[in-house]
Image (cartoon, rainbow, N blue to C red; front, side, top):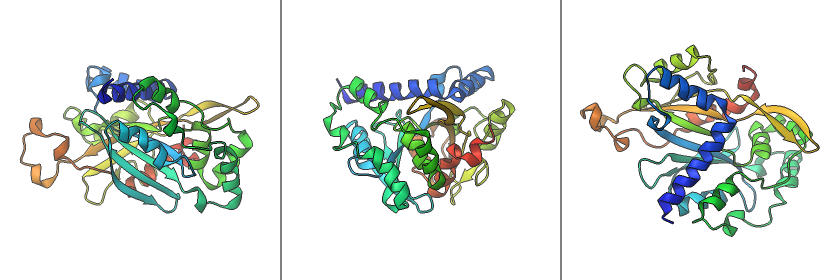
Length: 300
């Protein structure tokens, strides 16, 4: 099977489960169709998708990235989030019709001994890199892996304890590699909706709650990358022992990439992805992470 065919199947599997788990996705798409922004879901350009991981032996970025490097992605810039104790890279797709990928990992060794002990009580069950055992040319195998548990289901008390020091850690210990978000490319929407101010107003008019950490619009210093996101709605989680609790699920992001100065003379219909601001911005992403944090999710 050709790599692009495998990649399309893997991305399709990720999006299918993500939409099932995040009702806001379908609701936003339906609202966009009703108001004539798009005709169908496929009209949306997916700017990027994101994963969260644990930085421990056999896991983390070095493991998960192998899946996407094999399928033609290229690793690009490194980002550091000191306060949240995270590292991240973004990955450029093999062709412009595919989304960029953003993978972050928790620097577990930087956490308190008590928090590390809880995390490692789960992740130590992984004794070799699980990606090394996969046939990465088999889309079904990869899809199943990305939606399987890597360690035992946590108990709710551990989830709560992790959240006291790192809400990121708590999210990952339960959600594993569930897709954290996908991203609507706002700049490709019709005139009147292709700026974040107008699109955010459209979202709020339809009742969607936006992450306001650092402001509803997070902008890079150069002003050419602007992002916003919904607040993650709660999903029912079943913890070890059958304990049912509502916890933060995933969310939807929106990105507006400006046309770079060298290309601003181009007519709008000639502007492609290569003419717009590329990459990511640590300051923006730092606040977007909080879309799953209690300070935001308590609003919905």
